[in-house]
Length: 209
Ligand SMILES: C[S@@+](CC[C@H](N)C(=O)[O-])C[C@H]1O[C@@H](n2cnc3c(N)ncnc32)[C@H](O)[C@@H]1O
Image (cartoon, rainbow, N blue to C red; front, side):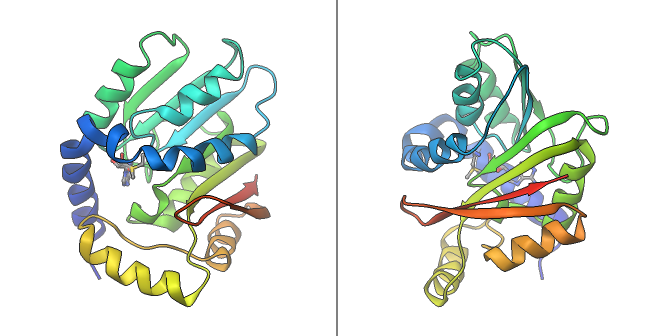
């Protein structure tokens, strides 16, 4: 098994090198992010966090839905991704981006109404710690939404092995059951999982504090 610090360093290097071209190369993932956002009720003046926000697309889309209300934070381990997110979000005064690992979040306890993450959970070197950390910064009854490639069947398990060879910094795809176990260990209530009709096969896993 790879050392989590080494995985983190590889992720950072890879994402730094991809930040400039990320939106062009990975534009096909935007449908999955819009599906994720369609499942999130934002309410009045929401405090929202995006774990591993990349260039900030999902946060800008979320902010567009609240007509200037709320505060939206994104963290990402790659300083170049954070830079791109800041450049692309210049016209949004309520969007804030910080370079941070998701395993140690720079926020007080009980700070966010909603935490989301898209296309990134499979990269995290310590998924259990990440979900526990998300719980810490969620307000009571706040919700966590994780959208990622689903690994519920043998085909996806095999793809997982192959994509591991193509993607040096990738870690692992998880099944619905594995997400339920992460939530349970973090003392979050599992609300459910929703399958998206997009390619690659994405599922959104929802839990509540
Ligand atoms: C495939 S990109 C997805 C970005 C964005 N969520 C999107 O869908 O456009 C994965 C992101 O996860 C970030 N990342 C990976 N591991 C991380 C960690 N442990 N802490 C913070 N960010 C991490 C990478 O820097 C990268 O920006």
